Figure 1 (tube, one colour):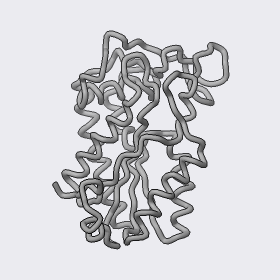
Figure 2: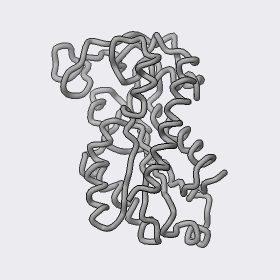
Figure 3: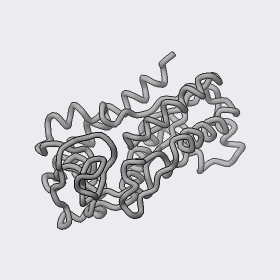
Length: 242
């Protein structure tokens, strides 16, 4: 391993690891957010932990414990889905980073697995910048865009869809039930997903948005390889950014 896991250290070891030049990585993935009938509520947490393990093995970082709660307002109509208020999600990240930064590190990277999370991460970065601490985070859509254009066959969608399901088939197939996967795409629109046809938001009776029936392990392996390359490059760019 090139990195160190903060939770594995004693406070004396942490004092040595948390020097001003250290790059701290905070994995962020929802531990309770619906992903259709074929994926589990902790889908994003599984993704965050997978990418965190790869970062730990291959990059020189201090890996913080995974954060499972954040801002996910688009899914609250579906039982089991939890979202914090934007202000709470923002302040949660700020407080975590401040606690660690006081001992030396000035660079923090949120290994982000969500989309709506960016709406809270951006103001968190602004608040921390005023204190001389730099916060970066993954733009999931941008990192996926090149490979999605190559492998996707579905007509649209980005949630519990062909691509996300393919990724899980590649990294955690035991957590996917393809017998329950169904196409659920009724176009795009403003707002979150809704179970009410004709209601405000994007209609999705299943909670998926796209066509997960087109998913395959082979597609997932291609997506994972491309995404990891983009993620690792993004972290290394952030390490040397002004």
